[in-house]
Amino acid sequence: MSAKIRVLVVDDHLMVRRGIAQLLASADDIDLVGEAENGEGALALCSTLSPDIVLMDLRMPGMGGLAATESIHRAHPDIRIIGLSTFAEDHMVASMVASGASAHLPKSVSFDELVDAIRKVAGGALIERPVAAGPASRTTNLSGAITGQQRRVLALLAKGFTNPEIAKYLGFSVSTANYHVGAILAKMGVANRAEAAAIAVREQLIDEFDL
Image (cartoon, rainbow, N blue to C red; front, top):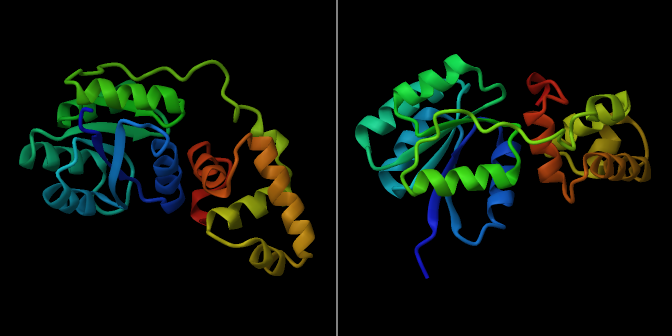
């Protein structure tokens, strides 16, 4: 059996990192070896972990994705980098590739598209254009489907609050909190809180400054 593709995930949102980690765990040929919340951390981990692939968020406090990509590419030319951002405009793609990235993808790509890109880049491919998001994703109409109260619950869920903590913070019963969390998971079509939080941040269903 061939060695697994060693991946490092870099994103300043904990729940996004955990969501990606959970998704990658279902790919038999991929091994998540580490997580970093900024460019400085990514550069340090590349020296100690030697990943094959780095999934690099573009916008982060401190050293951002562009500077981190350039630094990692210069110090570790064998490590391949895939840039990720909410919007993959042409100038962002060009900037990431110019900094040494092998690909730049919008965060709206499906899990299958992300894994496919990881495999292709690990094999030496250069993806010059962003992978187009597939047909209408399951989150397309979520902004209107999730109520104002559920949006507050979702924001607290993304902060790591338990259902009893959500109930106490918002001033209603635990059973009501359970109901809202269950409804949110059903509307988002996900099986757990980590994936819901990751999608909420990725799709900007909640204000990241509230996290």
